[in-house]
Image (cartoon, rainbow, N blue to C red; front, side, top):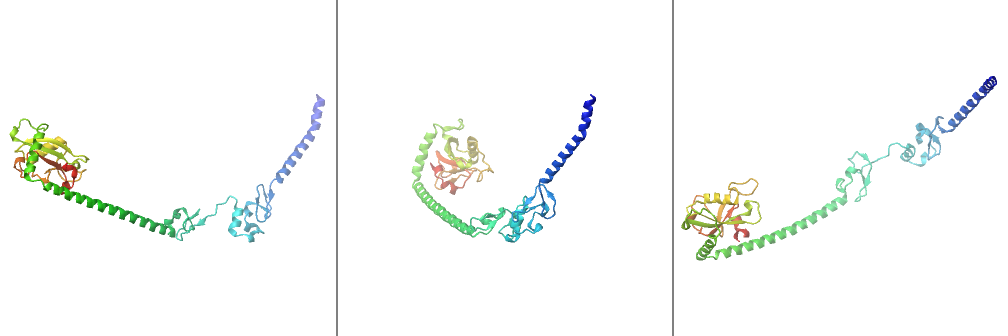
Length: 309
């Protein structure tokens, strides 16, 4: 046992020497990593290599102006600074618009080729000559389209006026006897389906075909009902009863065009029926006639074919 302790004691000084040698070797290896700056001599473990002169420098002397670079004169200042920046901010260019102070990535315009920032990249944003030419072409095309539309509208209006004239002339050819005969036939047909107060005597009934103008309800097709009223019933009361049948309001509706609901005799031109007069006392209104309930004027109704069918 004592021999082993003596051997350990003898070996202890030798072990310290080995550790010291290993530490010195590691220190040498550590100093071998990196490179000394050619200007200040400081050891930099990540030296920056100058692409112009090939020297190694620390971060403080990486720029050409900091180490009197031999290749500095062969390139521009901006290019050398970019070569030695290595991670510095990317260089930006000014916008082609003189009044723009923004410094951002620029892009050449497809029309004029001048580089502009994102805010002025479109031709119309920087007074590009190509934009002026394009605007003139667009204006000419729009004027041609408007001229075509205007001509088509004028032709359609002319055709409509011609049709209105023919329709009005056709109605004026009907003489009073034919009108009376047509109303009598219409009354005989309405007796089979007309609705009203059954307490009214047959000889006191006034039959009407009531047509609701689709414009009064924002519809597309006119609605029609066969109704009968007392001959002494005034138009205003008759209008109220018709409005109840069609479930519409007599008063003006804000969401619809026109005024209050009024009654017109279907004629050429349509005859406005006064609200205070009795049905049997109105000149031109026949028993068995047709009337239209509308918020439009007589002139507007006369131009509507659907009302006279």
